[in-house]
Image 1 (cartoon, rainbow, N blue to C red):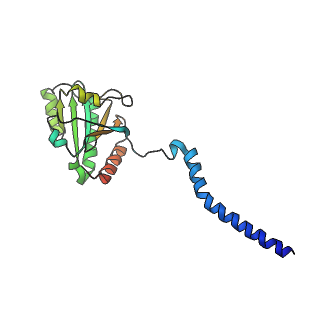
Image 2 (tube, rainbow, N blue to C red):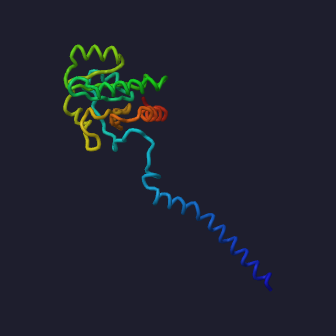
Image 3 (cartoon, one colour):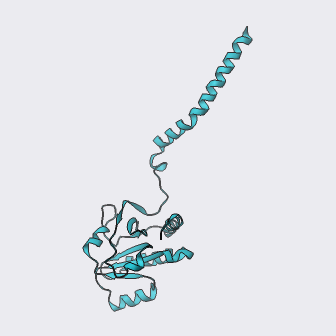
Length: 194
């Protein structure tokens, strides 16, 4: 009689174990979604800050607009000439651009100035940054595109524009160069344009 009772109990345990195995993955996924928060589902690996939604820019008014189309573009602002912070950003974007090696032609750099550079600054830019495109006296509409609550005054950070002309990411001045390079390498790898 004890054998007859143990057979149904064994079958019931196996059934419960089987049901538990099927329920474990969805329960674990739900717990991860609920309790990992910023460190789990919504965490990102990019060094820059995404601008969401991406902002379309009107770059047609710039003298170098033809050279910018279909390229990834780093944009650096300078108010009065190009101060130390501006020089650091230009150096950093140059090094990142060079580091992408075979994809260097896919990346351009643009310096936006409030006023035309004086002769000394122009000479320095020509020597140190021969690939740099410079635009001065840009219109207020384009300048306003680079303003927002998330990123402070122009000049405190630099921006990344995608090949379709959308402002999509910004980097504070103190961003780790290796992170910037990783971001650009990922974008170049997955990009179907530019």
